[in-house]
Image 1 (cartoon, rainbow, N blue to C red):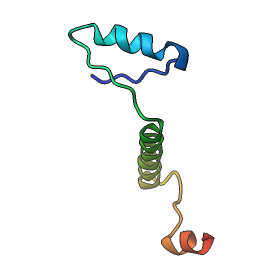
Image 2: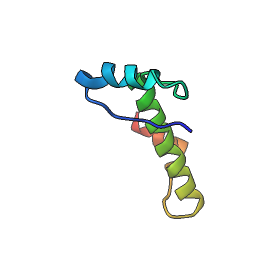
Image 3: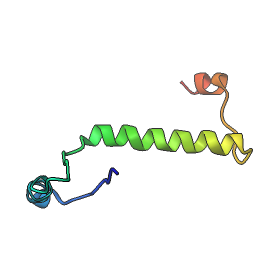
Image 4: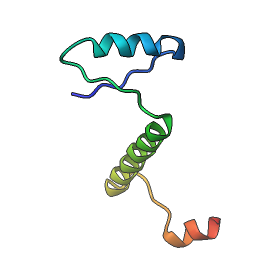
Length: 68
């Protein structure tokens, strides 16, 4: 199982050291850019699912192009 924790920067090193001391835990920091990409991807998948259910209407490619 994967778990994402949000920890104050001042305590992050301590928590990572503590977690890595446990033989059954693999801990590594997540780059904030990667996390933002993951959050955006989750939101996009959620929106696609809502569109498939007919709960929202997505923009067409033409509408997106016109916004540029």
